[in-house]
Image (cartoon, rainbow, N blue to C red):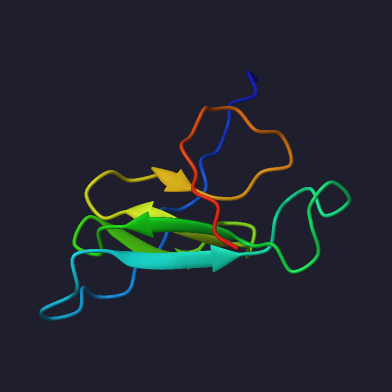
Length: 89
């Protein structure tokens, strides 16, 4: 018998909102609390027609693509990508 990976079920997404704003913001706590300033959060702006705020397969907050199954953006303990960011005081 050859072991095979069993994929997790796709995430259930909330229904799109009628007349959503152009962008919504997802705010959350940083993944590196020891290296972050107190009360300093992250913010991701996303198009609610394309992405949905939900929880990932492990129960953590995430945004998931409405048209691509298993396409999820979630905080990670290991950053694997580059990104742009703004800072405001």
